[in-house]
Image 1: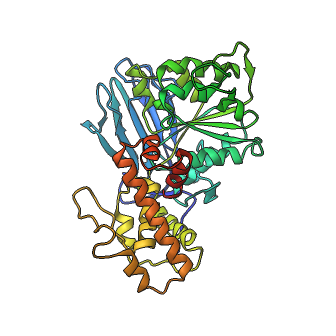
Image 2: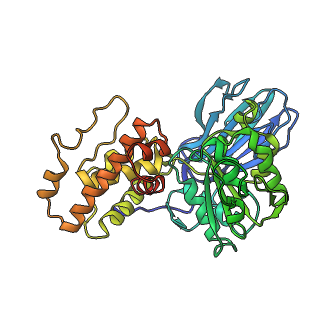
Image 3: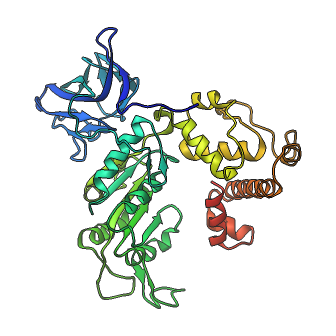
Amino acid sequence: MPIHFDEATQGTAHDGAKVRTIEAFRVHVLEGVDRGRSHVVTTTSYVGKSATCELTLTDPKISRRHVQLTPEPLGLRVSDLSSTNGVFLNAARVIEGYAGNGDRLRLGDTLLGIDVVEANEPASVRASLRTRFGRVIGASPAIRRLFARCEQVAPTDIPVLVEGETGTGKELIAEAIHEASARAQKPFVVFDCTTISPQLLEASLFGHERGAFTGAQEARAGVFEVATGGTLLIDEIGDLDISLQSKLLRAVERQEVQRIGGTKWIKVDVRLISATRRDLEAEIQAGRFRDDLYYRLAVARLFVPPLRSRDGDVELLATHLWSKLSQGNLPFPTEFLARWQSYKWPGNVRELYNAVQRWFSLGQTEVWDDGADRPEPLGQGNDLFDTLLHETVPYTIARRRVLDEFDRRFVTVALERTSGSVAKAAATYGIARRYFTKIKSKSR
C-alpha cells in the first residue's frame, strides 16, 4: 500500500466541525509577568524558566523545564515534565493530553493561549520536502520537521544537542548532519559514554602520554584529536561523570585538550554533537550535570520523535528494512502490518528493526506488551530450521538467516548474564571485545 502525505500535518481544530490543515501551533502568553511573549511550535518545544527552552518565562512558579509541547495529527500534545506546580489544560490538571485551537494552558501564574497556524500562514520551521536525511528515512510530518531543522544546522559549526528516547536513531541523525556539512570529508568519531569504563573515560576523551598510568605503554591521542577537522559525537552525554564535565567544558570552549601526563595544550578543530536519552534539565536539578556545560552544548537542540508519533512511518521503515535484509530478493509480506501499525513501539526504530529481522529469520510476527505471551524459543515449536526448510529460500539467504539469528541471541544472552557489560561478556565467552562489539552492532 503506497503512503501518501501532505506537506502539512493533518489535524482537527477545536472550533467546531471544520477540519483544518495544520502546520503548527502558536502559543502566546495571555496573563502573567511575560504577557505578550509567544512561540510557534513546529516541532517538539519546551516551556519553562531555562534559557534553553523555546519559550522562556520568568514566572517564579514555573519550573526550569515545565512542559513539553509536540505537534501531532491529533493536536498539540501537552506533557507535564514533573513540574512543581503542574499543568492545567482548560482548568483541568493533566499529566499528558491534547490541546487545540482556542484552548488554554495555565502554568503557575501564567496563562497560555493556543492558536492553530494553518498551512498558508508563516511558521518558523516548515516540514522538509525530503523523506530521507542521510540514513534516516521517514515521510511523517514529525520526522520531516526534524529534517528541516537538520537542514538548518548542518551547514553551521554550532554545537548540537540531539535528544530522544532509546532506539529513535540519534546517532544516525548526528552522522547525517556531519555528512551534510562542510566537514563531510573529515572524520566522524563516536564516543559512547556508556561503553567506556570510568577509569578510562578521561584518557579516551583527551588522550594520554606514555607512562601516564599503569598500562600506558605508549602515547595515545584522545577522541578530540582523532576527530580534529571533523565531527565528534559524544553519545549518552547525560551519563558522563560530573568530575569530567569541567574538563569537557574547557575543551569545547577553547578547542584545546591536554593529555593525561602531558604538559602542553593541543589545539583541536572539532564540531561537537551530543546525544542523550536523559532529561538534562532534570539532571542539572539533581546536581548530576553542570548547567554551564549544558548551555554550551545546547546551542541548537534537536528532538528525535518516537516511532509512535511518526504517522505512517512503520510501514515505510518495515518495507525498507525487509528489502535490506532480503537484498531485494523476497517480496514484502503485508498481512500482519495492521497489527504492527497499532503497536506503540516502546523500543522505537531499533525494536521495529528487531521485529522485522525476527520476521525475516523465523517467520514470527509477534509484537507484544509485557503481559503478552512470548514466542517459543528456538528449537521448540516454530523451529527456525523447519521454517527455512519448508520455505522456498535460496541456500545463501537461509544460511545467513541462521547465522544472524545465532548472533542476535548470543549477544542477548551474553549481555543478560553480565548485566549489560560488553567487556565482561567478551571475557566470559573468550572473544575479543572489539569483535563482540562488532557482533552486537550487526545484530541490532
